[in-house]
Length: 234
Image 1 (cartoon, rainbow, N blue to C red):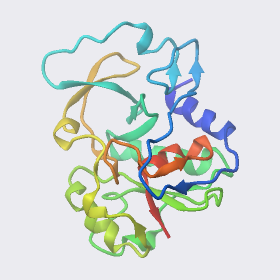
Image 2: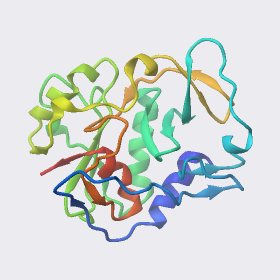
Image 3: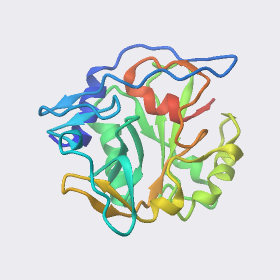
Image 4: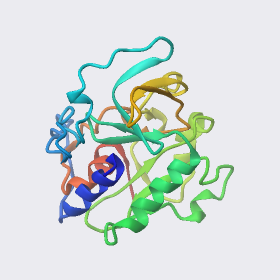
């Protein structure tokens, strides 16, 4: 079973009613542990483990050239941060659309949907600014994840500000979860071993690579990415 399939199978089985509360003052985010072990793998930083994964292969030896980024796993074009169990981005538009399709159709009832076409009335298309929304009504609040293309990334904050919704937060202070200079060429682990990759889409979140410090309870595990790294809106 691939890491991608294992991740979403785990999330689907863990769906349960949950509540999200924002603290009045920033608090330390909850630990992100309890991941799924697949095929005898061992956990990486409390996240997913997979089929005799990197933790069992010893410490990777950085190759010459692009920077090796620890805790990254790239599979089917999806860039995962295994320490936080976060989808950081994608290496192609096809990988991004396949991931969105998986979210929308593979597990009925989860309520994860792409943003409506009406949100793209301006200069940017869904190909420039793909968005994943929570439509489940399980969470009290609404959250979205935005993965701009590297070309569109400088305009991510202004794009959020023009959407027909109210963003609770300050898009201008958001930042990418992986530095664009690194995303353009980096080394990471994958099913084929340590390889060089180029990200085409990178997550743009309120606190960049860090989880939201104002969350006291993430509720159902399936929504950790949305709640800890997404934008709260109404």
